[in-house]
Length: 466
Image (cartoon, rainbow, N blue to C red; front, side, top):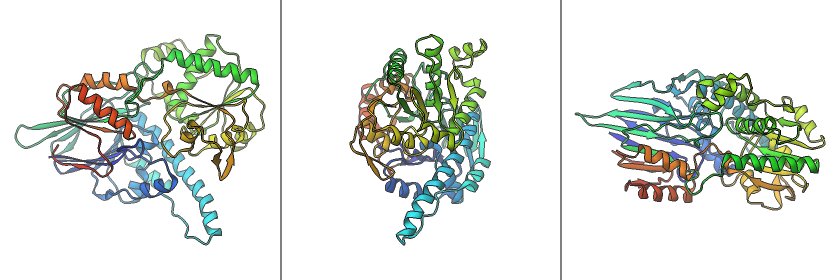
């Protein structure tokens, strides 16, 4: 018997969480934070709708917060099973979850001061550092290709997903009564082929059931050369204007990609030397982990390393550590580039930099990844004006640009190339991790590519005996 209960990243892109029941085992694929409307996120992240004590194990696809960020809430509420992931994912989760707990405590302190003045009940934290310590102690890192026996005829294997460092496709095999067996694939997030640094995704064979992401099912990304050309143009612009280019970026994956591209532009002599500030201690830690796990690198990045070149360093690059150093950037004169978390502009130092620069038309805000609905990043992309930041209405005068090709997600062509490589035995496909129009586009594509039984589950949908 194999049942699937969809709880998160169903007709939305955040809060990835799917409960698989197989031969009596209760397995949770991912446990991510929901990001979007503050009020909605507050309630959704606390109301797991699953008793954490009933879960036998978590199988984690990768370390992005929308996939791993609510794991400490499981521990806080009694989960004591193992969290299976790759070694690189374990190291990234260690720094990301601690940073998440810190940011939440800081935000909660601000909110509770306001509520105290209004004589309202104070909020409890979603989780705290002891909860992070607990869940990290339950991590069980496993390499790609090793079969892990969970008992009762249930095994799984990790395959490379090519999305971020350590990201994995989950292959779950379930032996049922008699000779019948079922194989389920869960993509987590698939990476764009030929992206910088990382090896391309793999195509595991023999699956009956597929749970696939759909983030960019309705569009293709521009080429890397297009990205290089646009980055070059933006840098020349701010160099001439003596202004600031702000790049909101996820600390894991996106920041390392940007550094790689800037390294190439500098190495090829296509851009002037200028100060680039990575204003995120988390990004520095993540970059150090990226440098450590060379087993994840593709041939191009490996060749560069063998030549003794660091693909994520170049003249003018500065990693900002302290809060005072970060604040000082707001008084500094351009030209300069500031890369800071978070990618959706929902927290972190980038929000302060945007607030400082948003009303100057010489400045550029460059969005380099997907921004979910109801986030500050989405409002900037949609050019909402005026825009509210920290309760203050500001005029959006800075120029706003997007580069989707820097997304670590596979685009439409890459998604279907992967699907065609794994589809031969598929009888049922579920499209998740995409807003309604994306999962609708994905279901249509899957039918066109030969699988008739495809669903785009809504939150709470249960599919029994698939």
